[in-house]
Picture 1: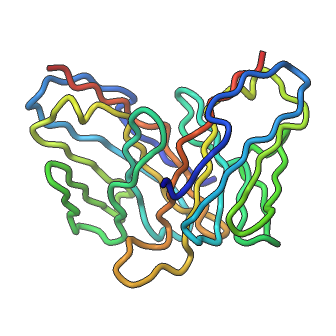
Picture 2: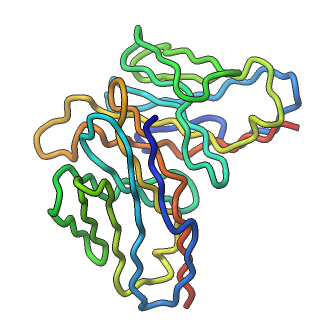
Length: 119
Length: 111
């Protein structure tokens, strides 16, 4: 089973609709992140959460909101979708205090992505 | 402003060629630099570099960091078609290790 899962994997919606993208992880990590990826722009951070009570805006948070329902779940909402929110969305997790022998605290583990098209 | 710049943006080579991908960065309080490979979907972790001059190797891939000149390179020798992917460079920056990504280098290896 995948450690980081995202639902849905693909979504088509219309301008003005509210949609939610969900992310779940079984890695036991405290930190979770939402990114969007657009051609030529790389990955840009939307929101991040260091635990269920700590949520922070990233570089492009306008038009988005998040909810950290539990350590394992982090949802991203588009309150009123617009066409320029068409993108590939990734959820990621990281462990701030890794166990000895692991690759280091800055390593992030990504979900499979959600491809969103807003018409 | 924290910044990561990768070059070239895209590259086409033939199987067996050696390629070098570049990543330069400007961040406050540098701690580490990470390389990821992205094929069809999610990025997968390749290397994390924290010290200058120590080469990290994994099979045909290797990477080195120069903290004085603020750049890293990713080398791939004897390229194969399976190396075709987007290669992303990222640096933790700001409050709590948020990753700042470069735009990526698209590598295509032709058979």
